[in-house]
Image (cartoon, rainbow, N blue to C red):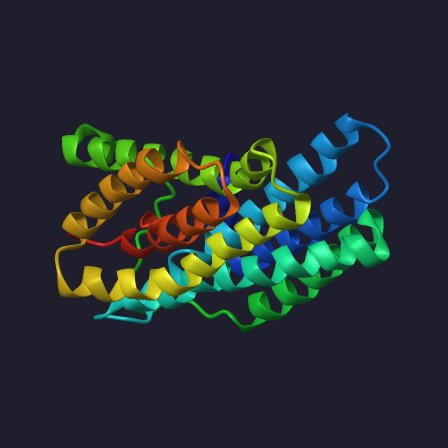
Length: 263
């Protein structure tokens, strides 16, 4: 997400398509380069910096596009769209695990790089925004908004929410192994987390369109925190970890369904 300001600026300066195509190439290069890594610092540069920057350049410019096409039911549309990350997570979790077992880690990274390159290129070429029709504000960042306390509170919630989201997404597999689960079981836990995301996000979109979005976001953020204390901390078995992964995955990342819209 550190790449977000750069992605926002380049998208406004050079256009979404150019920024996203560059991001797709950088992301793919990161995965493929990581397959040749010999030292840990090689992975920091390739699978860390390059892949992370590429994801930011692809993802951030696409965020406002979908909402431009809807005057109503925007949360439902965003929920269905963001459920794709869950479906993709399921496919990549089990698919990558199978590739590592049968082809080896280097080959799995190269295949992942090629798949993401093709998928990102195709979807980038198909994306169309309506910035001119909706008369979108061309300011990359209006510092005057920071004078409003409600904006500062919203940014604080978004930061804390995303901090917890990233922590859970990228640490659950390591946690699973730390309690004695096998690598295959850790992969299953990650896949079930993404399955919960694919199921839950459209439902959150429906709920937030029916009720106040700010209320939906607040309640689900609180509920996610409670579930972490009630199920994640005492989890020592495969079954409980799977249950936590699915339930928390279903309500995780509510930010993506309610972002950029009025309460």
